[in-house]
Length: 430
Ligand SMILES: Cc1cc2nc3c(=O)[nH]c(=O)nc-3n(C[C@H](O)[C@H](O)[C@H](O)COP(=O)(O)OP(=O)(O)OC[C@H]3O[C@@H](n4cnc5c(N)ncnc54)[C@H](O)[C@@H]3O)c2cc1C
Image: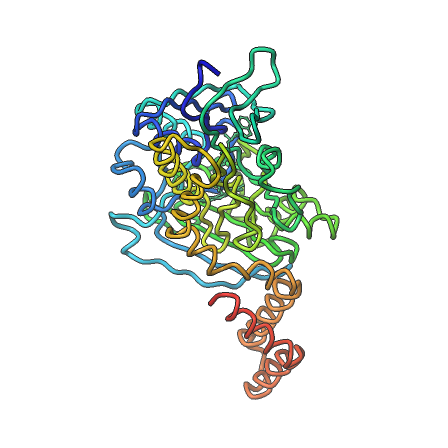
């Protein structure tokens, strides 16, 4: 206890590094413990990084950080087993600085991000797995690796150990994570030359696109597939709520294979070589299932706290912001020399004033709404595809008859269900 630090951060992902940078900048002796060989070595994401929230936390990052392509376009696609239809939004505003978003490779990004905390004075130690917390008089006072010399003490411990945080359970902040609170995603990084990427996706040199694909991409389960363009690779993945995967017995690796073989997807990735494969959880419990976020001597940040907005595919920026807000609360607690839950509740106040809680609250019912309606991603893509096929097939059938056929397709879905889906969708978003 004599060698006590001001703060220990568990995990050198975006949340932990952001917290450590803020703490060290405020002059607090801060150590980050990371179980991977280096920050980013074990981490997974799609990944799209939004510029504005990142700039607010890391001014001037574009000049230094390893970035791939500015994202100029968003495509939303519905897949059935033999068709695809969708909507694309591309704007010249996203194609010129200041950009809206970048594709980013996680490992180089995390490595670079870690240097920002080190530059501020935080010490980062890799290949150290924290196995448990140390307690005194009901308060967390440190961490242990389970080794004889593996105990480290601090005024406060920041748990930034990612989705399915075991340490949050140890801290009593969360009961065991439920399968409805986590999505499981399989993702591959597949190499493809830049010119092929630009040809296949219709992109200007050096610029990128993001595709989010619903329906058959997840075998109709709640979730989505994605393809994001990097400089010389594509990130391709798909996943669904763990509860639905367990219930249906669908394996997420098979789901990804099927998705890659789909006739609308296969030509986009033809000849691309898999260079990285991973499967990872994403916390999707949302606002209604957030864990307790602090206790005596401990706070929870990033994925460990469940801060993900799946609708806008925001995780990293929420993780970084939550790390910063936790650090602010800790700096205030440090000034008072009091790290009790009551003092650390300031973290919750800061969160409540931030976009994190505002946005998570706004979409708090979306997952439950969609989860209670498994037909949404199964029946509607099929209906829209059949209607489009009918409309676009020129075969001598009088147009009036075609209209009637399309109307009868829509009538095939009970009015009450249509109304309830539409009202439910609107309600869950407002
Ligand atoms: C497939 C996929 C695609 C995604 N796409 C996007 C996207 O496009 N945009 C976006 O913003 N977000 C995306 N996300 C979400 C985003 O990756 C997360 O929200 C973000 O990484 C959370 O950061 P974090 O620091 O909280 O956790 P993590 O990034 O998971 O970092 C946790 C760190 O803690 C370490 N650790 C864990 N346990 C221990 C331990 N016991 N001891 C020591 N170290 C430990 C881990 O090794 C890791 O480095 C995606 C996620 C996935 C899985």
